[in-house]
Image (cartoon, rainbow, N blue to C red; front, side):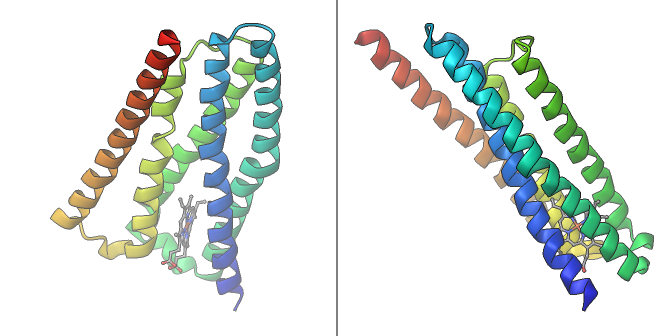
Length: 186
Ligand code: HEM
């Protein structure tokens, strides 16, 4: 019974953690683009984004990570045989990258607040695709485990995810260019 509880809250933690990570970097996009606005809008927006980022990071994203990891420890404690499986070792490798990404976001948040980050909105948009790749890899490993099919279907799914991410970027870029054209014509 405890195992099911750990798994349920492991999944809830994952949803919260990823919601936080995706939205945080989306806020970085707006924060970076606020630099193009005239004063006083620039200062007001930057102050607001700084506050939103801080709250999102400390109230949603961080607890999401802690709940996911704490529940994962509970799962392994209930079923230690998983510790011998290769899928778990590979999954842990991806989780380490994800935790690294999480902490990198914190560093960027601090740099943005200090006015020391000169990344563009477009760079943050690209950065926001990284957790998608990790999410897909980790979930596939967790679901298929040692029988993860590394055949053409898996590679087709991976290619689809990459194509979708690229498509979203291109669509966003086109919309931005159209908007800029409209603004410069007005
Ligand atoms: C501290 C790192 C983690 C460890 C040690 C860990 C370990 C585990 C274990 C032992 C299970 C139970 C497998 C089963 O009963 O079938 C599980 C389930 C699962 N994990 Fe993790 N996990 C970690 C992080 C993550 C992360 C970051 C994600 C998502 C990005 C994730 C996604 C999942 C999913 C979707 C399941 C449910 C799989 C199923 O029921 O078929 N895990 N995890």
